[in-house]
Image (cartoon, rainbow over all chains, first blue to last red; front, side, top):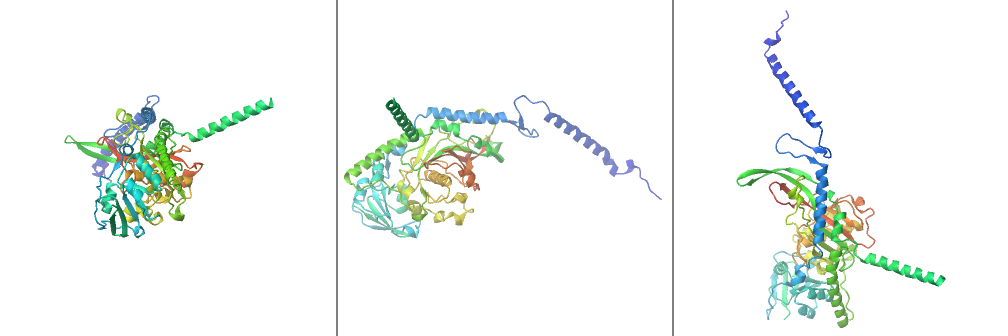
Length: 201
Length: 321
């Protein structure tokens, strides 16, 4: 015997009207979105991306991108027109001063470095002082350098020419790193962890 | 008749040669002309959305769009000529220093006849190329960023209009010409380990496969003159942004060139922007070599900003090119 069940009596068939309603709604929504996408746009404003689904959305056009580049270029040119010359840097205007006092008869010291230096640096000499002091001292040729504690632009350039370019500045970080507290001194890296500081006065 | 033609020819030839020499000696670029050669398209070509963030303003949560893009922040120059620049305005400033240096040299030669100009101390056979470097900073003010926020882009903080000279390697002769200072004070010392042993794990110390940023000297070992120049320029930018420990820097440059950020060659030929450390060496160097060894680059730093919450961008870290 074959049993036939009426579809309207089947509990699963109760979902059919809801399913049909869902399909119809999605079709209408899809058609609406399709018609929106194919709606005539404002001339000269091709849409690249416009996902107006949720939250704040903003269409981005090639026109906007072009305007960005034009704005940048114009702002740059306006800025360049205002800048007739490059300002002289502060270091050249005011000079450099490490604010280190004179040693005044201080004895030789051995200082332990906070951070060890590479082996290749052992034997390097640094002469730290003013331009006149550096002229008196002669560091190890090829393994030495001069560090100025005070200099204006002319003195720095003179030192660069006089000492074959082996001139730097005794910046506060460098002075702290080596443990220098007065000038003029000769600093010698004895081993990776120790330096000797010999006053030149 | 023949004589007058000869004279006219001589005068014309002399005039032409003088004009050629003058053209060669005059700087080919000016600050204003950089605008026309800068690759502005680099900004949006590498623009991307990183996500959405939230910040609290007046006790209310505000959503913001996290974006990342390159932005032109400076000009880096590599040149074999001391105290001279390819940018007119910078050349004027360097000319003053050139005059003072020549005066000092003349005084020195009068007192010690065997004295010479400062020379580069080559660290042996590794030294292939040496050049002076100049680092100039600019951040063109972009009013459109606030006026018409059609394209949300990250912009630098504290936009400064005029070009500023941050670093001239001629003044930093000790640091730029010898490895001494960077060797002395390189902490940790792994910064000076060769990049062929460290790349790609060390993004900060290695400019991709090009070589090491440290020690930050004017010597570069690379088979390509163009890539060597970009590497030298990146090192100079790093000196200017990390000036501690004895380096002579005229003013701190706030945007250290980082691996994966961008540069654009504008002299001797204008190119599109490329990533620092990019493995596409052939593309970057083809037809770009300078016969005089002078290279001018626009440095594009990659900035990150949460549009809607932050007023300006921060520098993105090193990344794979």
